Length: 123
Image (cartoon, rainbow, N blue to C red; front, side, top):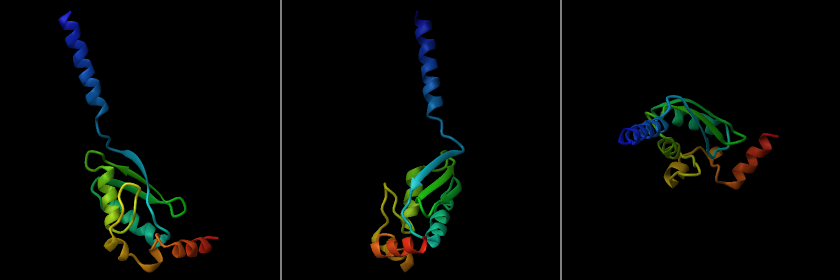
């Protein structure tokens, strides 16, 4: 009976360790604030400069950043912090006033006026 319990215990530990294994090519999607192609370049560059990020593509219209990352080398929070450091907000981490103020005037996505200007351009 002890052997059976021991074997079951080992199997459960093995399965839980397997479930926690970090993926080499994990697909991640984040919402990142921005309004233009300059923002796109800055967002993608900040993401790709994060160790472990293999692919980054940000959509101007949907604000979705699609990533392929090596979870063994980085995590989503680190990437979000790198995006905030260059002035772009995510749902979890907001850019500091200083980082946001360093953005080009056309990239001030928090301004309703700038957002309206970009909506007009995209029509």
